[in-house]
Length: 294
Image (cartoon, rainbow, N blue to C red; front, top):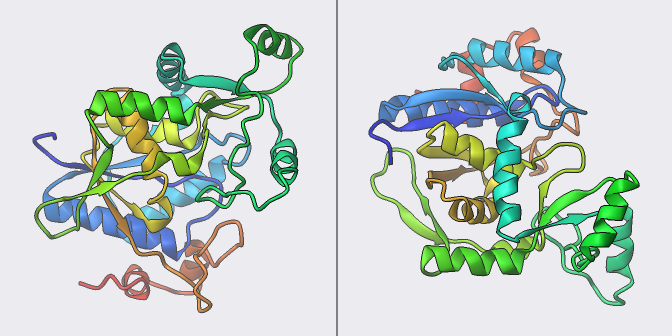
């Protein structure tokens, strides 16, 4: 662990921030202040097809308006694909990755043909049914030469065995609660994700790979993020062990929900901070709305 704690907030510029982001950003920032930690802002924009400069500009404006102050420069994932390629190559050299040429519809069709309810991963997608896992290298090279798009998946059973050997036992993570001393060791279960995608078809990384590489390079000591990212900690801890990366401590906070109990979402166009600001809301009122009052 570093002498000085480091905490980050890492939004994606694929839409405007809503109250859920305000809560997460404010909680991370206030936790950093309470701990005397450095506070960093990271723009997670590996999804180059959906992320836009105007959304990033609005994010920076909204966060500044809320009162957050961060160190410069801001790290943007889209500027560091070579770094992710290096980490991907290390995993590949361990024999833990394989190219997957399957489309989402192929995966869904293969799962449906099993004739019984197919298990789902924590995100609600069908567990990968193993298509192309045992593809011969010569056939994979032919597909690549023909320009067939592919992702890189991790052979989860093999990777977990390797990680357990490196860790000397089961993999866990350290959970902390802001304002409370000590940590609690919590188990992880990477197998529930199946052979997860580690590099997308369009970029040499997935969220999982980019976030653990970035956290290590930025010396992040404490991660404050929502309960929707609790399950991905399974994969993040696995990758940290495999790549010999330091382990941050994690706090997964409650989610801000609407009147029906649904988590707020950019995709469903929940009311943005920009709209709330235009309607006259103040930073203090936003903090009160999400239950963060001084």
